[in-house]
Length: 600
Image 1 (cartoon, rainbow, N blue to C red):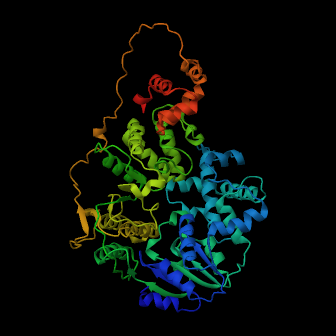
Image 2 (spheres, rainbow, N blue to C red):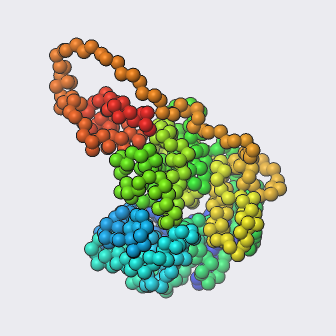
Image 3 (tube, rainbow, N blue to C red):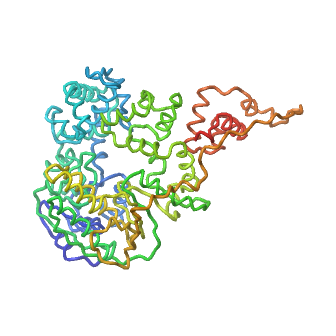
């Protein structure tokens, strides 16, 4: 293997080092070669960013015969040291707002606000996550108000701060004592607080720009030789309390500036976008050498900043009338219609329609109407719920049919390689690459940043968040191994034409066409029922079966609600038939009876 001079310097280095590696620069290859150059008797720990990266890295190290390398994620390492040791049970998906309110018996802190107990519970949940991802030893050492930007939310938190802080500590204590199941964040925090010393000679920490302060504290306390790898400009998880450990680590700095993923034209565009940071007072001084061999391919992936932007573009794509399964959503399509809290688009839609009896999520069920929900969102800064409200207010009862149109063409994960088009937000495709990509026009751009500076002024901007917005576009651009199709509004001013960069015109004055208009999914008037003459006949063998008996048994309100949810979530008729023990015909009849096709 031909290594670059930069790679050879890293491999020959001694002591603690940090490696700032641009996208596609072969950092995994470099880390493997670094490990190979260490004594075979050395015990080496490689910390991967997530489970999928961990599995891939395990295979790569094993293929090189590096049996002295242990590959872990921060959580897998902490799990063995904490969960197994103390016999904790883990709450797999974290606690929802209504669960926290119920467990703590919240009263709302005496604020007098509507749904105050849920607003308080939401802030307690965020405060717990904030503490568990910090390097502090006590909740009281943090100021939760530092996280709040909305004036209305800040006023609420100020009025109930002591109560929120106290209940945060009560909830953490309940997990610590094993009274309730613990979260993944909690056992990682308990691992950090135990100040462990790990039995390794070298620790290689990957994706360091998105490390939690919790794990970084563990890493810095180790006696081993430490290597931290990342890309300063790929930090996109600040909203999860990640910090850029490359800036925190006072180690000797090395660089990997050559990208083997794409050519110089894409490298120039990536550098041009990063130069926008200079408007925010952040010097970039980054050079990227594009040394990849471009792949000639039509777009194979469509990437967006937001779920909303991605869903809109997906509907445009599937409205061409083609049939068959040929698209794939990174993380599966269902993950784009649910919030982390558990509420679904269909819950918000049912609230919008005034059909509160069909709402499954306990938090949404507490809301009287949409203004009620919007007020809750204001008080909590719940961005995911806010996005769902936007989608529902814009597209209403067309949503279930539109999502179903996408699901009908969606390939299962095991067949992902056969997809003609992959859809993903930038967060979900982190670390991936595609032959060619198209970007949705929902990222920040130079014009928006300039207007914001003029209107607000540099001193009043949330610079960390704006830097992260620029990083998102940089990460999106650098996912391609070949061509890039990009809206013209996302290009830096006066960026030159390029063979590999295809500009998508954006009509600013023209009203944007509704991509769902041609799908004929608007609610239809109910058909007039016709009286039919029935002829009595002997029952067949099939009609004597238990399923046939179930077909004629009354539907309960609970079954109607369950059928409605399954219909909205795109379940197949045959699957619903198996679930309810009825025939497909009986399922279709009940769908008609409940007017689900008309309502959804």
